[in-house]
Length: 117
Length: 116
Image (cartoon, rainbow over all chains, first blue to last red):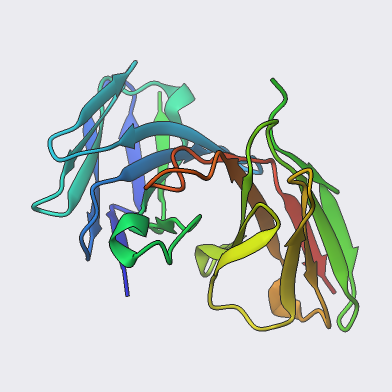
């Protein structure tokens, strides 16, 4: 069974600081997603990482994927208060299951990020 | 382009009742997936429909069911509600084709179900 683990689960940061959220997964995959969720709101797609070594950047967020290590990172640069949210990584293994995992993403537990002034 | 629409936004039910939730995907999307989100279990996959056929199902009891209509709109039904069914139910749509059937999932705002 695929397991996806994020750490840390809680992250309290000061504005202006840098930090990294880690996402480890337990089985072969080369597609990983990062989502953001604000309280009471839906999931907003941040990044789709499609292959080993993929790196995507948007504003103060940068995501990378190492399929050999089964690890993705979400790096936050010079945090601002607006980045406070819960961040989820999710793994797609559908091509590796003969198509039996259609529509299914396996999510990590989420990292609750709070950025303080 | 309109996003994924879920109705209703909030529901309050009592134990033993049944409930139906609705999801309208983005125009042109043929795949609809449903997820349950709770503080304890996180986000868990319920099922996925594509062209009116259920292609995949998660590990939920038979009280949870769904269907998809020819216009790709989907409904999920929970019968004999239990307290533990209280959750945010999210649906997501995607094109649903290709080797990676998820491509990019677009999530709706969810239905918050409270079971009393």
